Structure formats: structure tokens, C-alpha cells
Image (cartoon, rainbow, N blue to C red):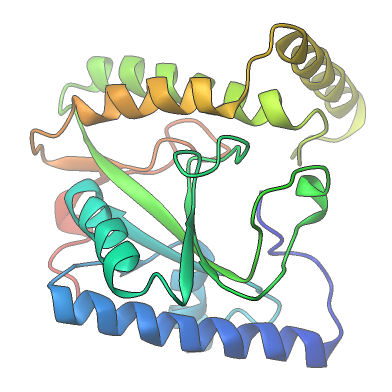
Length: 236
């Protein structure tokens, strides 16, 4: 649910990308100084490999870390870069509806259309994806991932009645109606993102024993982001 495909005039897009590149340099220096390992992810990884930089129309930077490095990163940013950057996630802002964490440059405003009715501290950001160890037993992995994936979608619908959907035609109409219905019901029962986030995080915290696989479990398509640890590490 990022704004990765919004059309900008060339000057605005260039300015956004330049700011984000400077943010990435700060991020890389922080990780280097504190021994934190990370990797480029999603559109940023495609841009590096295919374009030797940004995808020409992209407006954000995607970074992945495994949970131990992710938790150390958040502590280091708060302690060492808190005057320049904010950490935006549901733990810090109960209205924020995503499982990604954003490292936001203070003094900037950057709010996607789908979040127009939310009052979170949206600004120019690095998008941080936390990868967790998942079971090497395929049946157990699928069951555990399904539960947190469903809750992550309910988390979005608790805040947004009209989310970005990747369906068209009659299917899109039906799915959009169901999303709006779920949103209304959750509002009626005073359920917000924080309730789902806290439950998801508790389950993920219980899975810290290293396995041979890691996953980001909250993408649009279920089970799409599960990989062997050896696919990512050692980084270079």
C-alpha cells in the first residue's frame, strides 16, 4: 500500500528520490557503526539490479532485516538519530495500519491517497520490512503464517474502508464491498490497528528460534515472501 506507482512531474520525483538517497546514506552509516545487517528488498532490489539505482518511477526505498537486527535498529535510531528521524509503526502510533515500520524524516510531509483520512505522522520515509524465522515444517509454517496474515489484513481494514486492491471487474466490486462491510463492523466494535498489531507481535516474538527459512508474512499475496536464509546471507 505504498505510493510506488503514483505519477509525479519529473522535478518532484527527482527531489523525493534525492531526499531518500540521503536518508539511505544515514541509515547505512548507522548500520555500519552498530554492526546491523540489512538488505535491499522489493522495488529497491529490482532497481539496484535492473537500473543500477532507483526504478525510474519509484518513490520509496524498501529495506529488509531479520528480527534481531530489526529490533536493534529501532533502538539505535531512537538513541542516536532521534533528533532527525521518527519511527512510525503501530507500537508508536496506534492508528498506523501496516506491519511495516517507516523511518520518517522529521520536517517532511508525504501522505499517500489511501491514508488521507489518517492523522499519523506521515513524511518522506524508508520502508522497513521485518523478516521472521518460520518453521521448516511446511504444514506448520503455512498454518502459522495464515493466522498472522489474516490479522494483518484486518488491521488495515480496521483503519481504512477503501484499501488499495489488486482486483478488477466483478471480483473487485465484491471484494471492495466486503472490505467496507468489515471496516464498518470493526468501527462499530471499536477495534483499531493496535489490537491486531499487539496480537501479531506477540506471536512473532515467540518464534525467535533460528530456522533455515525466513519470511515477511504480510505482503498482498499469502506465502509469497518465504526464503531460505542462505538466499539472503551473507549480504554484500
